[in-house]
Image (cartoon, rainbow, N blue to C red; front, side, top):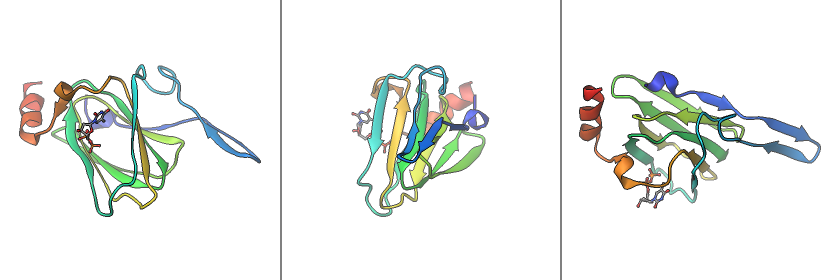
Length: 136
Ligand code: TYD
């Protein structure tokens, strides 16, 4: 498990003269059952989000509007992705430290998550994250 598993997933896009429609189905477009959706919006100029890791959580991160940058770090390797299309999502596997930044003023970041919110699943501190990475 590591950043090589963090990949852009292209979602279906149905286009006609009315506009575009995309959709996501659990276990079909994403490799997990969807349990939660949360979204970041009204993001303050220059603000960054994330800067934490998760033990078990899997996520698909989508720029539903605007654009932003996300860095994923497995404690050894890092990868940077620029998200800017509602039909593209970044799959983030467990045991990844992530940092989201460079949000455009109109950015809306939607996250599809495999688990309900659980503070015990978080690494809020990079040293704690690294300790568990080294144990694996
Ligand atoms: P946090 O995960 O720190 O935000 P981000 O990583 O996007 O910067 O969450 C911010 C606050 O919101 C924190 O108090 C926890 C709370 N929260 C929930 O209650 N439910 C959720 O599903 C999420 C993602 C956060």
